[in-house]
Length: 179
Figure 1 (cartoon, rainbow, N blue to C red):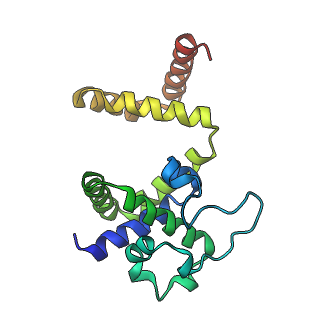
Figure 2: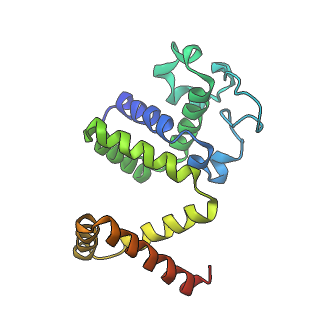
């Protein structure tokens, strides 16, 4: 993948994951670099090209001529994405490139579905987000055959059966965690 493609990948990821929660690790989410979110309630102000640190400008160089025309939210998302990219090691960058290639190969309808689900996730309370992440980790750690069986079972279930499965999971979670 060329540097330009990597930058394009970075830009798309920044647009898709542009909310502050998407870059919540301390090095990126605490406002320690250009692109930090403005105070709550304040309208986003444009982010001047010169306000970016030199490393961010280098990563975002292909967008330099267009920078002033981008909406402030997009500028900040791209600045966060550039900082995130700079903080990645080679392995993480390779994984990001692979995820971007996977994203590019998805049909537009599937991309839109993913965007909607991400927006729904972002609206969840932090505790609910943590549960979703934990459930996903547990699912990901299952053997591939068992994951496939669970997927098929869910896909083949009627709406009533799905509701019953969800209720059973809720009860199990309450027993396990007392919540």
